[in-house]
Image (cartoon, rainbow, N blue to C red; front, top):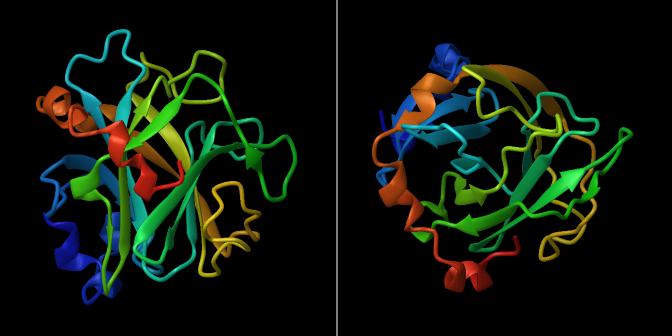
Length: 212
């Protein structure tokens, strides 16, 4: 199933898409287990290596319609979990890790975890924006994310149609989400035999296009 086939004209008919399911991105060719909210076009997709033993990396795609921001919690809830926020800035994509102990705009989080964009899966067009990236050392053992041994995991998601206060700044304050929820992923469906090849497409030298 191609994301471009249903993001705009078919969204109202896709209530079933609120359960994560497989789709292959039309531009990158990467297959993700993906949650899509048909009401606002928010989506988050996850790809894991086929053999996930000891792995702490994954490939993700996140995006939406419009020019607002999208966010995901790798640990289900918002508080004290590792978060990722992303949004478009003209034809570029801006993204950062976030973490907070209280409700409000979360601060930028730093650590050994990194994001490296995958250029052929990162774009802004007339219908939606998509940020695809390798998340390295992002599965943590401190309770802030899902675990490598998990067979299923809950992810929190958030969306706002309003852009951050400073779109070019990855540390920009974001306004409170206008839509949010949690969704459970079957992690077995996210495991992909081509993960190792797709991982090589994440090239740090193109990161100057992004603010990650």
